[in-house]
Image (cartoon, rainbow, N blue to C red; front, side, top):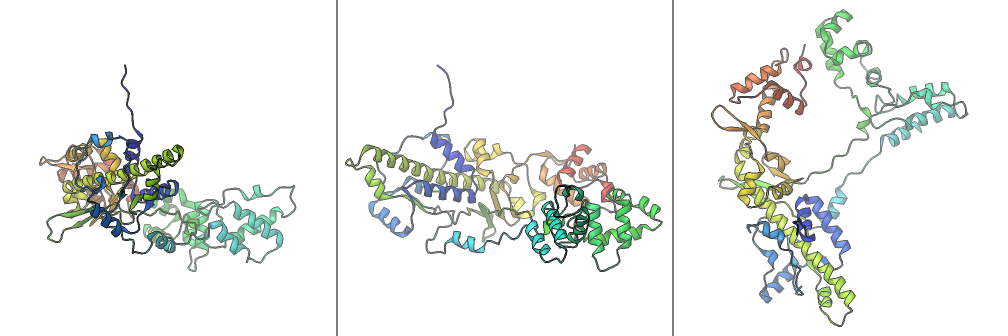
Length: 477
């Protein structure tokens, strides 16, 4: 005798569906529709509801959203019976907006509104290079140079490496001529070997006189990056004001010009949960944003065939397996919606001040507290909020960000780590940039706001997480 943990296929599928964000869930449904012949989209919702009412049957999927979920919900893995009549999944729970088949096709609409992928930097430079007037050897050398320019616009090889004595299509002198012409292409700064040359190319193409700035970058780049402006001013025999003015003029320059063309594409974020203030201002309404999920059902024709004894056994078993798979999918989607909605409501009730006042009002909230309140395991809460986004008066943010640890304040209350970082940001934003605050000074100001027992190294760690430089690099002259 031995103990083993056994996860049934139905339970595994429920956990996988629970973790999926809205867009990933839609892709999952589309994949199932393509692979499962008995699963289909119910286009005429009204007719299906009428038939269900006439028969006096209520599907187990039409339960209210407030149904209590327990561990037993995942353990119920008994196979469905042979009754498949009107087994339908409808996206119409009380707290999710109804799918209307009369509306335009959202998928087609999204495809029509999707922006063109555009040209890559290589294609953009190649198009310009074809219009450049030069000798054929220079043109060939220039195209070879363009082939080795990375997405940020930098030439990643030495020009001499492009030349070989075995080739006769261009000479070493042709490469040098071609490189100068390539560096004149748009966007300004492409074809440079490093940041220093990239900035110099851009400044040389500007209409105003940038000779001082070019000298500053060419001779004092390292000191400039270390923000040692007084030392630079002394070596250049000029004033700090002149150096500061030059830095201000160079702020328009781009250290990654290639990304102007081949921009890194960000994936769209679609909220899974919507939080809106109630009309009577007594709290917040919470509902799911799954407006595009189709209404699913088992094809009745195939369901009838699966019960027909005249059909061969292999065909009936095939249909029953697919019907069972379709039913499990619909059950998992409904269970996901119920769990996500209940978890979201519990979180919103606990973090009401965050939606009123913002990040500084965020309270410490362990997942175990929500798990006990909802009546599920902590792992279920973790899966429910993974990859999900919430849209509220504070904007769109990851649902997981509403869960946080914290520390005690002087008045006996608790302050979340996110709220502490928000206060740090406020302190740094309001500091005197001529005399920026050290980490220890920030720690003392945080203690004045009631956040005690915070160490200087903790302030430094939070500052690094927030991508805030040290006091020396925040100093303005």
